Amino acid sequence: DASVQRRLPDTLLIEVIERKPVALWQHKRHMAAIDITGRQLTDQRLERWNDLPLLVGPGANAHVKDALELLAATPLGSEVDAAVFIGNRRWDLKFKTGETLALPDQPAQARAALSRFASLDGQGPERLLGGHFTRFDLRLPGRMIVAGPAVAASLAEAEKARRAAAQAQRI
Image (cartoon, rainbow, N blue to C red; front, side, top):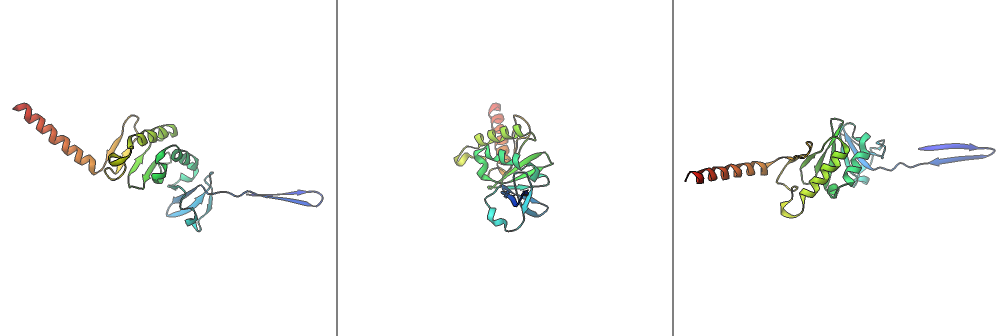
């Protein structure tokens, strides 16, 4: 932004305010750097800002502040590859390890769900992130719905244990 003021008798005052990119926004196969208001700054030489968060989807730019606050509120923020704006109302987080986390549509509920997920994720080989699951859905309060190969394996193992217990009762 720029403004020009004339101060009589012989002075011009020019003020230039540089807008700083805070995220990259991808929409319809087009990528642009955006500022905190969601305004597109440039779509040229974006490699300069590879370290900025990636927001994806229609309307994501208008909610950049919400997305940045959400990512800053969790230790998992650095592990997020992209925040995808879904249905013009909520975020899915895509992690660098390949999983997707579906969050509730209310910002306070989304922050609480992400915080709960971060505490459940832990560290080490028993982490939720890292290949055992493909999707986590925290849109329903107090519930986590998971999908992926580990779920199928766990269900098969539980069925096997149930059958063994039923057979042991018959003996």
